[in-house]
Picture (cartoon, rainbow, N blue to C red):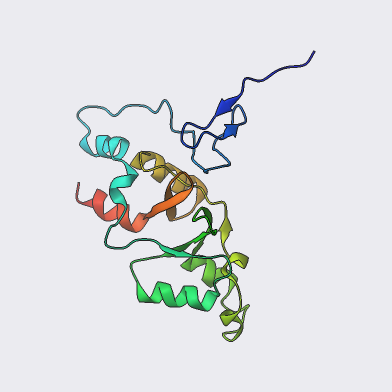
Length: 181
């Protein structure tokens, strides 16, 4: 007996998706935020974490650093040094779709002591980036972002719309906000 699956479309980009998929392969939007528990009324910090949207943490003063996959690591380092607020670069294709992320940690772990300083001028960022990183829509909650960071053991999450980066939310953005609450 052959089982037929109902066809599903991504609610964000319309691309056909596999039933049960956690995210759309077209726009990389996560589907795992549905049916989240609601905060208790008296717990204001809990309410903030569960209702605050990550889109509110996208910095207008510090837009994400976006590079191509062929950008040399030395240029990536120079861009990161020019904006010390940033802890990563987003790697995008020619259509401006996110294809990877490279953090300062990636550079330290994958370049330092392995690739010579001279070689970094020609060593492409695609060799050290994390391809197809976890992303979130701007409507995702802070709780969901923190959960993903803890489970995935990373510090930066690109915020995307139809696969195009809007910004990056990092622990550096979230922790000071929560400490004021």
